[in-house]
Image (cartoon, rainbow, N blue to C red):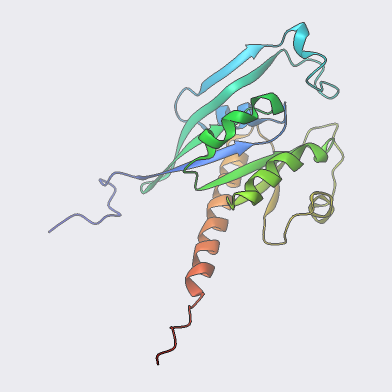
Length: 203
């Protein structure tokens, strides 16, 4: 008798999830908090040349920045393993996004309530390419605690896009964000399956 595809011995399905957001919002922190392997990081020291390019108003102590990607892996269940790809936050590294997002099941857009407008680029990118995403607010201690409906209005996103609040340093909180994304993707898939196509009229 052949083994069930859902057996614990079966190889887990793999899915690619992209983590995006502006410079210094917590993408590297999220991947590092949840990854079950030593995460791959491509951070480089910030130099004086970047000080007039990268807005450090809310990040005075930040001394390094991602210049390519962050990469990590997390096993959600016996049947599902996620590979996380964090995109660089600066506009000058935007040329890398297409390759990083190619083949992604969905995305997490991390937001900072002190500078919500910095999320527009990532939101526009995923909406334009029809990549499903959720918005995860990394709640910094000194950031205003807006209601989620206020954040939705400020970002002008559809009611069907989940918005959650979390702490990028907390493994369990990050796991809940990823599960929320997967639940959203599953609901989206079910809704699409309910759509029926009218058969062509016969002569």
